[in-house]
Image (tube, rainbow, N blue to C red; front, side, top):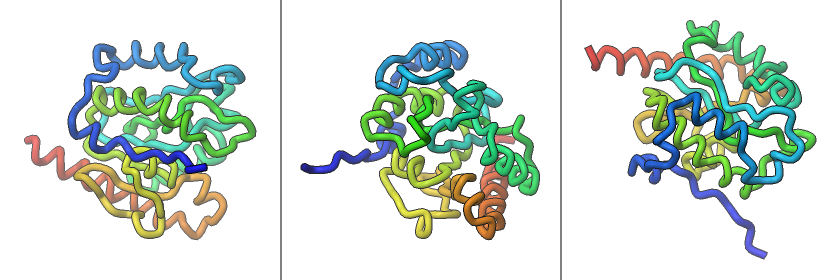
Length: 205
């Protein structure tokens, strides 16, 4: 049987689709919290739309909520989230300055990898978030995020690059937890995102 794959949404984003674009961010997040498009809705405690300023200059996209995120409805509040906060601080930023979300908005059972059908069900919400937030830089944290948005995998070859003008691929914070030697590269990537944001702000003056 041929394995189904995601092809990425980058081309659709270039075309500026009108997917859910009639919503403002609070209304979109209400739709996410009421979503029943895949079976992940059956066992969730809370959907996790994401949080941060709107509009935003930097958007961080992870893989999926974990146990603590499912309980609180907030992104990256567990161990990986605490590491992310530390990395942001070392890069000269705070959590309040960035918008944080995930490819899928509900926790997969036992924190397994999201299935292709689950990713496809959630991608319209992510596309709408990007349209509404209009970030200068989108940090794709991990292979799932890079694959879903760009249709590309392989952190080793993609990490640290800004692709299609605003998409920067980096490690997922959980991967940094598993190998703390990656912390320096992770912080460096976040600094690159901040530099890109600062340069874009200068261009708007």
